[in-house]
Length: 258
Length: 258
Image (cartoon, chains in turn brown, orange):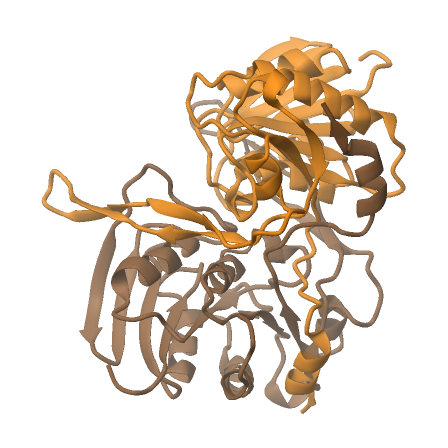
C-alpha cells in the first residue's frame, strides 16, 4: 500500500509456472503486486467462467507490496475475484503471462492468458497478455524479461483516453536475434484438427485433441509475419465481436417488421 | 445421407436441454442432422477447449437423417470432434442453442453457445447461435421456434461470398408481441461482479460468482436496444480481436527496431 501503481498479475499455466515467476521479477520494479493465478494448468480455457460452482482462494503471501493468491477457478475467475474481493483498491494495470507457448492469430480466442487480460480491459483496467513461443515447462525467459520490461515501460508512460489491451508474443530466440517490436493485426489462421483415438483401461474409446496449425494470411502486417521475421508482435485487442464488413447487405436480408 | 443439407447442431446447456430439443424440431425440416452436444451443463465455457485430457463420445442415435452424440467435452470440443471425426462429410451449416438465457452484448464472450457457432465459422461452416432470454429449464420456446424457422429460412436462401456467423437473441415474450427482427451491433455492456462468500462443510471459505448486468451503451443500433424494444437481435460476428481504432498512435509508441 505505497504510492506506486497497483499491478494485478495472472496467467493460465498456473501459479507455479516459470513464466509467471519471470513476469513477477520484471513487474515488481514497476509497482506493488497482487497476484491471483490458477492453482493448476488452465491452458485453452479461453474466457470460461465458473457458474454455480464453488471457487476457492488460497492466500500465499500477505506482504503489502506483494500479495499472492492461488485460485481454483479459471484465469477469468481470477481477474473477477481480484477486482471484486481480493484487491484493496482497483488495480492500475493487469499483466497476464508470460505464457508458455504461442498466443498469436487464432490462438487468441482459445487462450486463457489473453482472456484474463481482456477481462481486466472489460473492467477498464489497461492490460497486456505476454506469451513466449516455447511450450516447454522449463522455457528460457531471459529475452522475454528484457522485452516485457521494454514494453511495460512504454505502456506505463502513455496516458490513454480509453482502456486498452495488448496481446504480445515473443519469438523463442536470443535477445540479440530479436529485430524489434511491431504493432500488428491478428493473422487469419486456423487449426486443422487431428484428434488421436485411443482405448482406456475400461475398453472405452476416447479422443485427445491434436491439430496442425496453418496460416493462409500472408500479408506483412500480421502477428504471424512479425514472429516469423524475428519481431515481437503487439496486437491491440477489443471485445466487440461485431463483424461490420457486410452489415448493409445482411440488414437487407434479415431486417423485418413482424 | 440424402441430398438435403447436412446440419450440425450443438449447444452449451447440455444434450437433454429443452432448448436444443426445440431447435431439433425446427431444423429437421431443413436437412439431415448431426447433433453433438455436451453431456452436461457447459454454460459460461466460452471458447474453452480440452487439452491433454480424454474426451468421450456417446453415440445415442445412428439414424442416417438424425445422428446423435453426447460429448464429455466443451461446446467447442463438440464442434471440433464433429468436424474431424463424427460427421461423414463437412456439415453445410451449424446451429447452436437454443440457449436458455441471454447471449447479448458482453455475454457474447462468455457464452459456450456462441463459441460453438464461432468454432464452426472458423472452420468455414456458416453458423447461427440462438438464445432465448429466459434462463429457466422449462422456458417456453414456442415463439423461439417460429423465429428460428424464419431466420434459418433467410439464412439458407442466401449465397455468401465468405463464411458468416450470426448471434441471434430472442426476447422472452409471446410471438404476437415480437415487433420484428433487427440487424444490430454488440452493445458495449458489462457485469459488476458481486461474489457470494460462504463457508463449506469443512469450514473453508468459498465464492460463488454473482453479478449485476449494466449497459451504458444507449444508442439505438445495439442488440440490447433491440431486445428492450421487443425485437429479435441479429449480430454478425467475427473472430478477429484486433482493435484498429487507435492503431496509428499505438504504432508510434510501440514500434521499435532493436
